[in-house]
Amino acid sequence: MRYVDEYRDPAAALAIAAELTTLVEPGSHVKLMEVCGGHTHAIYRHGIDTLLPPEVELVHGPGCPVCVIPMGRIDDAITIAERPEVTFASFGDMLRVPGGRRRSLLEAKARGADVRIVYSPLDALALAQAEPEREVVFFGVGFETTAPAIALTLIRARELGVLNFSVFCNHVLVAPALRAILDSPDTAIDGFIGPGHVSTVIGTKPYDFIAREYHRPVVVAGFEPTDILQAVARLLHQLREGRAAVENQYGRVVRDDGNPAALAALERVFTVGDDFEWRGLGVIPRSGFRIGAEFADWDAENRFEVPGARIEDPKACRCGDVLRGMAKPYECGVFGTACTPEKPLGTCMVSSEGACAAYYAYGRHRAKVPA
Amino acid sequence: MQQDGLAKVDFGGVRRSVNVMFTPEAEPGDWVLVHVGFALARVDGAEAKATLDLLGEAIEAELSQEMTL
Image (tube, rainbow over all chains, first blue to last red; front, side, top):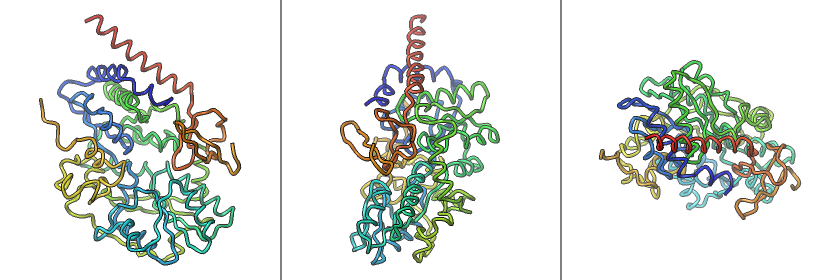
């Protein structure tokens, strides 16, 4: 396909890989975080990790929207979904995420709750129009990539006067999560591969603080193999020159100012909430969206009793450490044994963007054995 | 183009209606990046080519280095 195949050229990938070896001091250790779960998957799917010099370590960031939702919010979602009048609509990957007592939305569906998978929030709005006697609730999950779609759906619902539709809002912001990681004393990240798709919406400026305040380089990257390798090369160039700047490797879809129409929709519909509890990262100030006053009637948390459950992660699961770049999936005791994609314990194994799912799918079941 | 801010997008042979309210600059024939039923960005052909040109340079640099070895 156009704009895909040409960025998978093996000769170009090998040429960049050769250049990378000239950019690192032999025996040094450079720790780069790919923020986005989409990048994690691309790296292991294409074997990019095997093309990097041994001095470069990639650690996986929090940019997997399913992964960072705490178990308590899943239980809250199940409580809403089990109401007899409710049709609960969600993206497919949220359905298998276990909440407290390992119950998932899929199990709630099996016990009789009306839970449906939709491809787009607009499909959930269409459900509400088609079934006016049902209360259709959409499970809003995702970073700034996904939030504009939910914002525009709420604007449509208001314009059309669809009152049996609401959103259970769990949208999160990428920049506060990166700040939390940078402030954490036990994670020393030298540079960031910036999330490509979030940046189509927010642009590159929200990362300026990383360069300015923390003196770490950021290169926003596309998702094909040569995109990621180019981003690594640009990060290594910056580190070698002692620079810290925000650069954009993904210019074909990312503009510095982002997408003005999408940002305007976010601005109109959402307010930045006080705090949001992230799985693994804990409570991060001003890191989540709440539905604003103009759309309060479409906020599921105003319409239904939501328990606000807070549940500790299972002790055996190290999703939290994986999401902060503190542990590799194979270092978790239950990885690939008690926790598999078929019967996941933690969110990092459930989501198609989760690091554990990537390691499992592409055979990274243990640390590389030195040759 | 259709009503209600929708347009038909061809996903490698499969056609689907996509909301294009966030990409008012997109015209019929353009490539767009689609997420959960919404076009988030029009692919900029000039920028795409600039990235590819860099790849070409990387291959040439690698080849010339091999020749000097």
